[in-house]
Structure formats: structure tokens, C-alpha cells
Image: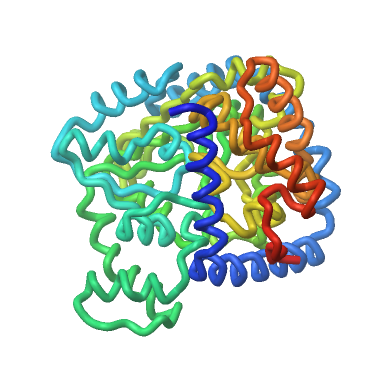
Length: 429
């Protein structure tokens, strides 16, 4: 497929999303709610805003020393009787998961964008395992056979009416589109899975190198079950999630959840090794009420290469709070169609260098308006417009161009928008 053909398919996808009333309805509701909640959270805790520079400094330091910190984190995890691997490629990751899991197992998962990067679900199911997503958004998408369209709220584009249809099919009776009822129904469906599953799998929001502590931020409580009920917990973590100290992890976590629209999340789990007890004669024994085995797998997948670039390395500061997406004028009308496995402006850089390649990133690079709203609302002030501009320049240097861009320039000059639309697109305020 040529670049122009790929662009036309991508463009068609954008227009299809713009014209989808279900996506428009869901986004309108979600964006309004998110913005209100962020404003309330930051108004109540104004000190969070002043911590942005501290958080960015932590990320700058950490990304510049990723390999060193990952090795330190591995030593710390092993010191607390956990297991840890450092892998460089997707192939090495999947091979290690095969060794740990085998076949015929039931895996319960909590939300992890890193697992989407490596298509872990599809791989494990292909090996004869059963995978159950337990985050409500991921559970919805798994059952309607769609991909996530947001980092934090993967089913943002699915309105309550569609969720009611899906759950009605599962339980065999008609459910009204009452959100409380739908959440309770999902709770009942998932309750037994945690205790019958062989393995719980998660990602991590942050990992502290000095203690080997895995941070998990959540509201639903499913991640606690996933990482506590099965006998084995596997965490798959990108290099960029490691910070030097436990207190650094606290700062980064606070910024993440406040800019993700929460005054305080319902749960912040700090997991340091497997469960243990010393209550019988002070003999430390592993596998008490929680998992007997903890396996943390740190994955590079070109992150260290990205960190060498003085402009692009800012993409690795991203903690996936999702705030930028709710402020992006293009994402606001197309949802995850402005993306591949990662979304929006900063997601374009992740797509180009980590999960997709230049061919996938090419059309995304020209979707961005360079408006800068993402940078203004990012807790770490990531300059996505500067990264996008550099990427465009490099695409031109590599002769990866689109004939449709000439048409877009003419449309902007003649009509005022690049797509030749006579009627303006409604963009959330």
C-alpha cells in the first residue's frame, strides 16, 4: 500500500468517526465531565500545579538514566524476593511470557497500554490461554471486539446504550442503559474470575528503583484483585516508568492522578515483592494471602534510542494521564481514530518510534494542528507540537510525503479547513 493509499484509508476513518453519532455523543459527555473534574481537582489542590516543574525534573533525570535505573530496580526487586527480567525486544518479551505462563492458563488483566503495544492478549490466546480484561472499559471493548480509543478511558467512545446492549447479550435479559446497573452487572460477571484465574497481569504507573516498588493507580479496585488474588502476578513495564526513589514515585503519581481528573484515586497500590509473613517463629515465608510469585518484566523496545534525541525524548516523560487527549481538537471529534496504539500528538511520536513505524505515524503527523493545548494541559509540559514539527521535517527529508497535502493547503486557503468541508466541524469548547 502506498503512502497516499494509507492516508486515504486513515482519512476515511477520521471522517467515519466524525459522522458517528454514538462516538460524538460519548465524547461530548466524557470531555465535559473530564474538564469539570480536572478543574475541581486542581482548584482544591493548587499545590499540584506548582509540582509540575518538580515532576518534569524527575522525568528528565530518569529518562536520561533509564538503563541504569532499570538495572537498579531489578536488583531491588530481586532483593525483596521478587523475580525480574530485562528484555530489549517484543520477541524477547513474548518468549519470556510463554516461559512463565505456558498454555491452558486463565489470565486476568488490569488495564495496561503496554500490553496493547505488544498485542499480549492476542499472543496469549493464540497459545491456548484464556485472557479476561477486568477494567470496565477494557472489559467492554473485549466483548464488543473493539480496540481502545483512549489511554486512560479506553471505551470513551462507547455510549451507555451500546454497553447495555452488550451486557444484555451476556446475561440473557434486557438491561436498561442505567450506568449504575451496568457497573453492578459487570461486577457480578467478573467477581469469580479473580479467584479462579491462574495468573494476574498488570502494567505499572511508576516503579521506584531504590525499593523495587510497583505503583498502580486505579479507582475500580480490579487491579488490586488482579495483583492479589491469583498465585502469580506478572507486571510488564516500559523502561520509561522507572524513577529513582519511592518519594519521586509519589510526586509523579500525584501529578498523574490529578491531571487525570481525580482529587484522589480510590486505590494506590504499592507492591514491593510477593506476599509474605513472618508470624510463625519470625521465619519469613512467601505466599501468604497474596501471590506467592511476583515477576516484573522491564521492556525497552527502542525507548533507549528515543531517549538519545533531545527533542523526541520528551515523549518518554508521558505518564499516560490522558489529559492532552481531552484538550485536543482533533481527538475531540475522532477519538482513537487519531492514533494507532497510542493516540494524539505525543502518541504520534510513540507510533513513529515505538509501536507502529513511520508509515503509521505519517498521516497522524499531519492530523495535529500544532495548537499547543496538549502542552498547556500536560502535567509535565511535554512539547508535542515541537516534536510533531521535527517529525514532519524528517518525513519530508526521507521523501515520505503525501500528494493530499497540496490539496489540503489549497483547501485551507480557499475554505478555511484542510478537508474541504463547507460546514464547520463542531469542536468541544
